[in-house]
Image (cartoon, rainbow, N blue to C red; front, side, top):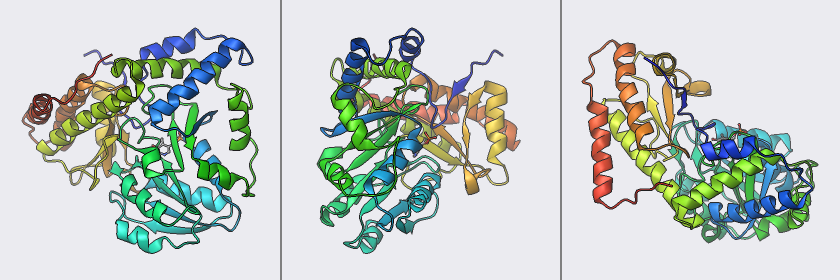
Length: 397
Ligand SMILES: *Cc1c(COP(=O)(O)O)cnc(C)c1O
């Protein structure tokens, strides 16, 4: 049969057609009134998308670039920081903080799990300058309780900052950045914004800006204070990724359309969509007898344990060869043990039903056992139907 190439990966994610065409036709030079207008509009809209009044910066780099910026701008060598890690991306915080000479304390829980708030409370001494965490750990599919973590960090006083890698969390998870007191929240273009990789962004609190007055870690390209100054004039400090800004403008318009003209409502709708796709997927895989890998599964992606004795690489390969569907393997030590299906950004009901239907065949072929076709689909259909009867808002733009 004919196969269409489709991404089900937690980044990059499927591209919004309007974002692709906006990119393809964009030619403006970045030091012009036209580009400045686009740049300023995008920065205002990004506040709405993130749900914050804090300053937002959009930089030309992958997500890790802004993760690095948050370390280099908010710390000085020797500063005590606390990293909460439960997977590959948590470990990235540890690597970054060590690279900048921080005195790194780590609260680590096994892959697939999330933190006990009491353990965090016990680790959080008054001398901790920054706490680093993920909203959703994309390597394991776990969701961390950012509201609960923020409450603990805020009760530690204004000298402790909270930095959240929400690169797969934004647009898939309800987050109250300002209400909870998150100091830096980080996102990337290749996730819920439905665009190619190349832009990363953050919202920065007043507390975090004040911290930057005194920190001494080396920084140059990622000097956030310099970017803030330029942004106030409608520019970026260095050449921005102009065509990606055009794509971002189109994506934000699409999300505003989901909210029928209200971008904040559109963001909520996008999150509800991910929640529904994830709930359908969880029900479908469990109906097939498969186990979820994460204890507190995120809406961004569903990590599924490979059946006993089957390398998840075989499952990933079968998805690719039979259906040209790109599903992610486990990362690092989890390679071969799980596969990951994302629901980030431009995914819908039909994508969800499609991947579950494909999974039934993939499982039959890789396990050599009988699968009753329709098992996953029936469970997912039930979740969808119940969601509708609960008046779960259906979205479309
Ligand atoms: C995708 C992702 C990143 C960023 O990775 P880059 O490859 O640098 O864009 C960071 N954290 C999480 C949780 C992610 O999912």
